[in-house]
Picture 1: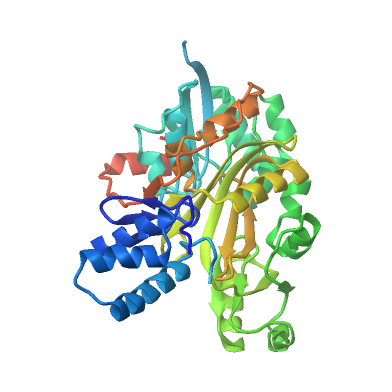
Picture 2: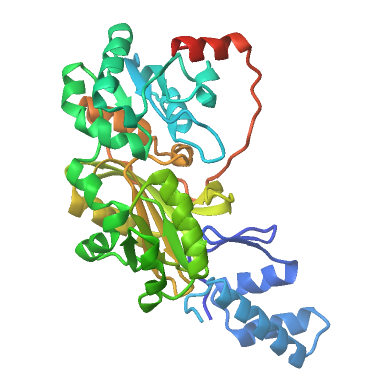
Length: 82
Length: 348
C-alpha cells in the first residue's frame, strides 16, 4: 500500500489531501504509521517497528492495521483506491 | 511605477446570504498593483450592502432592472457616463448579462469597455442546453430535460430515478424525492423565474467549482479549482479551499480552448464516489468566491479589466493550493440620510 505522493503530513498529525481539499487529524500512532507508509515501508517492516516499540501483540497489530488501511483507502489517501 | 488610473463600474453589490460577486471583485481591483481605480457601483435595490461600503466604492448609482428594457438602461448609462467617464464595466449578474451583451457595441462607442462572452457562448452553455453542450465538448453532464407544464411531471419516471433536481432557467433549484415535490418546486420556481423548468438527474457527491478567465482566443488566463467546505441552505459556499485537481484544471483549459471562451466563468461540478466529475452548470461570469483566487495568487478581476481595455495580460500558471476562504456577516450602521439619498436620488 502506497500513500499518494502529494499528501501533506504535518508533525501535528494534520493530513491534507491537496487534490480533494479534505483534511484529517491523526493521533500520534496513526501519524507514525502513515509516515512509514509514505517512506515506502511495507506492512511487515512497520509491524516490526510497532511491536518493538509498543506493548502490543501480532494479532492486535494485524487487526488495527487492517482497519487503518481500510480508512486510508476509503478517504482516497492511497495510490490504489478501494 | 505609477499605477494606471481607471474608472471601473461594477454591479452585484448585494453582499447578502446569496451574494453577488461585486464586492469581492472590487476588493480584488482595490488590491491591484497595476490599476489605481475609481470604483462606481451600480445597484438595483436600495438595501444592497455595497452601496454603503464607502471604503470600497467611490460612488453608487441605481440602474433600471433588465426587465425595463435596454432603452431605459442606455439612457441611465449615458447620464452616469457624462459624470463619471467610465472606462470599464464588469456586470456580475446572470440576468443582466443579456442586456449588456446586446449593448456592448453601443457602450464601446461611449468609451465603456466590457469583456463578456459572445452571444453564442452565452446561449450554448445555458442550463437548458447543457446536455447537448456536454456531448459537443466531451464532458459528462447529468441527464436532463426541460418541461413546460406540470402535466409532464408524472411521466418523468420513464427517464429519471428519484431524487431529481428541479431548476429554474436562471436561478433557484430544489431536490425532489417524488412527483408531488416536483410539482411544488415547479410552481414555486416558475412563478419567480418563468418557464421552462429543468429536470436534472440528481448526482450524489461532493461539490467542486472552478473560477476561470478566457481571453477569447482559446487561452486560459487563469483558473483556480475550489472544493466547497461549508454550504448554506441556499447551496452557496460559505467556506472553501483551493485545491490541486489536475483533471478539473485540464477540463477547464480544454473547454476554454474549444469554445474560445471570452471573459470570466465558473464551472460547477459534482464528484461522485467513483471519482467521476459531472458538470452541473456553467456561469458566464465571475463567481462570488473569486476573492479566494486573488488570495491564492491570481487576481482574475484585474486581468479581466486588462483584457477589456486591450492591455497585455500574462497568463497565471500557478496558485497557492490550500488557501481557504471563510465568509462572515457584518452589521453596518448607517444613517437614515444615506438610505434617503439613494432611495430618492438614485445615487450615493
